[in-house]
Length: 118
Figure 1 (cartoon, rainbow, N blue to C red):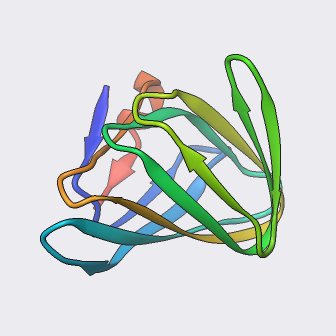
Figure 2: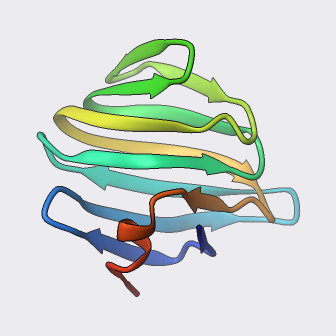
């Protein structure tokens, strides 16, 4: 399991190049800017707090254990803490994600953890 204290991180493993950067934080929450390219897939992951996602650009498909959600520019999604999911990028994608200040993202696939560079 990979825990991210997110500043700027790029995951690169044949199928994934993701940039995640903290753009704001205060004592209660933080905001992350996340970008992915068309065709990429974000592997199974979860957050330790609720996550509020705002799609700023593009289109992505988020797959949970019990549902699939397509998210397009201008749409939002509330993801409950520990609700594991994966994401497929259908169009170049940019989003902001708001987490509790101490919230972390856990990538649940070992092969992704081995490819992390900071």
